[in-house]
Length: 202
Image 1: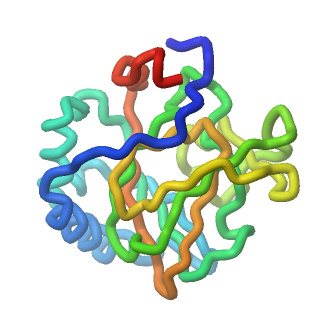
Image 2: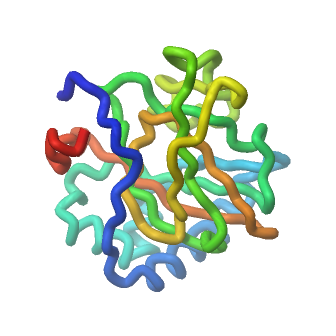
């Protein structure tokens, strides 16, 4: 448990066998979740962990190598269609509760070279509305909310081609400048991984 919200935005992570992870995870998406977008420009789709265990061994091995496998709670495909609009991925926090997952281990899957997670500081004390219904299939999102774009200013960004820990308790959104779909895989952990980050990182 922590009592103050971490203020860092992201921390890059060196991931072994990243090309194999990309290939395996893209195969999982195409085989099992190809309809995840529906008629929307964004998807946040929980992945069956048994499928990942069976079909993405490189991904599972990295979680084990990082000593995170026993705390691995959820993995999600987060994707945006090409040149996404603000309404496809509004500024949001995944959680406003520090005791629910506020760190995400993100890895690229496909078309991530010109895609970013942008971070914001809001002029309002908290979210102004719940995250839209279609995205709340992820449990942690039910503790989050969205912000109006005009109330926020950009404070940083991360190219999602590089694996990273992302602080999803800071207002953020996905931006995809590619013409095609961009897809990443995000992992969440329980108990939360506060212990991996020093107090000096706040």
